Image (cartoon, rainbow, N blue to C red):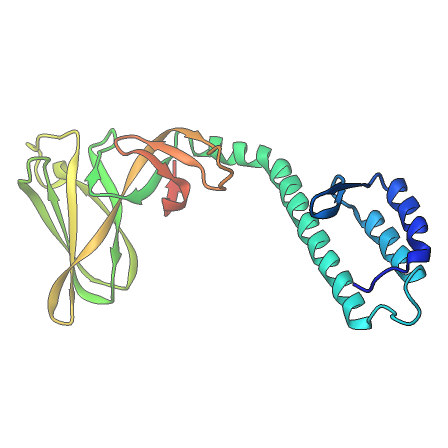
Length: 235
């Protein structure tokens, strides 16, 4: 920034005083102390600089534009941060509504432990890694004993739903509180494991205090999970 002529120093001092800026001296020379300058303060100082510049050493246009651009950038960032905070406050009630809407519903989340509904049926989905001609679902009890192996045939890549009930093929079947599920798909002539997802009932929901948009869900049998992990929701 170009120097201000000595003759205009008193004029600048009066402007600084008007803005509430005081100059304190220490061993390193003058030091300016004040609260943060606002846009109006900046413009007053810039005007004073232009009015009191040395006519033989005027402010360089490039420097002037750079100063304006720097201030505009800082002001823009400040405005963006304020707008984001305001938006967050306005969206807070909506987040509460979203969180409460999960309670009592079943959500599809990653997992291998499936719990039956009141009819003894377990349900979920298989994340098939690629198009396959042979998709297999294996159901075990908690000890690892195989209870059933279902050939699901050909399947496309992506999520493929499944339901299983041990009573359908065996009236004498003894229901369990939970089952283990695993899946395999034939890809390029070899069996490959496929991730499973199961339905779990949401017991409670809460909004994280760290400001993240995800809702924390307490899923029965799985504990706390993020709403971002939910693939599907049903009654």
